[in-house]
Image (cartoon, rainbow, N blue to C red; front, side, top):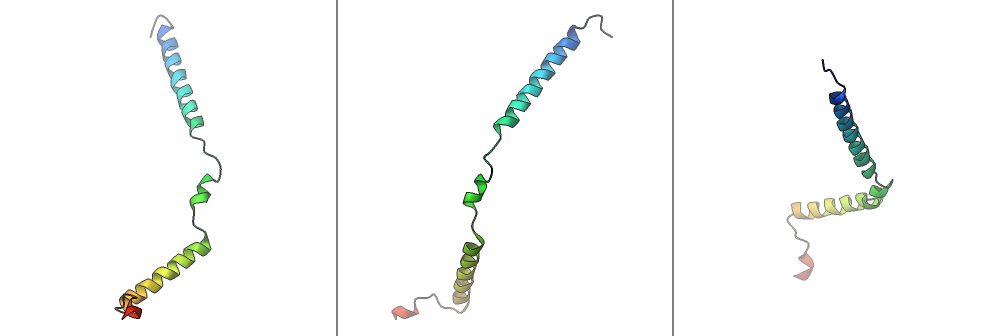
Length: 71
């Protein structure tokens, strides 16, 4: 097809550059393990929050706003 190997060499160098760039980008994306767990809510905290929300929803459904003590 071609009489010289120059196009093959040019393609190979471009492809090598792209693969090296990809490898460098992947290495840069590494995160510390378990770093996301600091922001997660514990099971007990979640149950407590859901219980408080359910109590508030029940109070609002009953028509009370929780300020009956002030009358």
